[in-house]
Amino acid sequence: MKFKQIISIYFISSLFLLFGIILTFYNYSYNGYYTDKIICWLWLFINLLIIILYWKKEIIKIYLITIIILILLSIIPMGLPFFGMLLYSTTINDFQKIEIDKNYRIERTRQQPLSMMRVYVYEQNGILEKNICRPSYDEILTSVLNIKENENLIDEAKTEIQNAKLISINNDSIGIEYQILNKKKIIYHILNENDGY
Image 1 (spheres, helix red, strand yellow):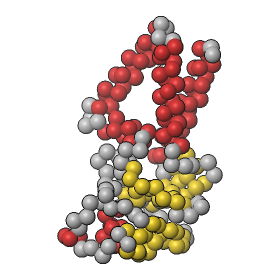
Image 2 (cartoon, helix red, strand yellow):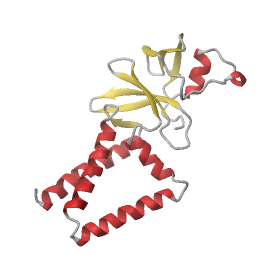
Image 3 (cartoon, helix red, strand yellow):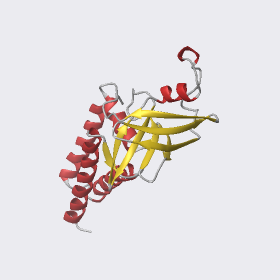
Image 4 (cartoon, helix red, strand yellow):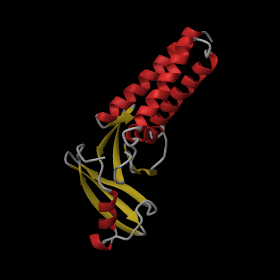
C-alpha cells in the first residue's frame, strides 16, 4: 500500500473519530455500544501502522513527537482530558449495558473521570443514537430499594441492574421498570439533556 493511500485512510478514520467526539457534545453518538470504541482503536492502529512503516520520514517523527507532547499536556490538568479520552475509547467505568427495547438501551457508567455513576438512556436514530436522559444511579437505587439517604450503604458499582424494560415514553418522560436485588419499581425519568455527566 502506498503512502498516499494510507494517509487517505488515516484522514477518513480521523474524520470519523472527530465527528464522533463532536457528536458527544450534542448528546449523540454512533449507533451501538462498541462503535465509538472501534473507531477510536482503528484510528490508533492506523497511527501506529504509519509510524512503523514510514519512520524514516521526518514528518512522521515530528507527528509522533507532537502526539507524545499532546498526551503529556493532557495529563497536566489533573489528567482530565487524558482520562476523558481513555474512558471514551475503552470500557473502563462502563458497568452495564441493557437493551430495554428495540429502539432504546441503557448504560450504567461513569463517562467522565470525576462524574457520579449514571444510567444513560439512548434512543436509536438510524446510524446515530441520542442520549435522552441520564439519571443518577444512586437515585435509582434509593427509589427501587426504598432506602433512606442516610442508610445508603450499598456499593453502587457492584449492585447491578438485574433487568430493565421500557414501560412508556412520551414527549416529557420515559418510564423504565428496574429490577435490582430482586425488587422491581417503575421510575419515570424526565427527558433532559442538561443533567450533569
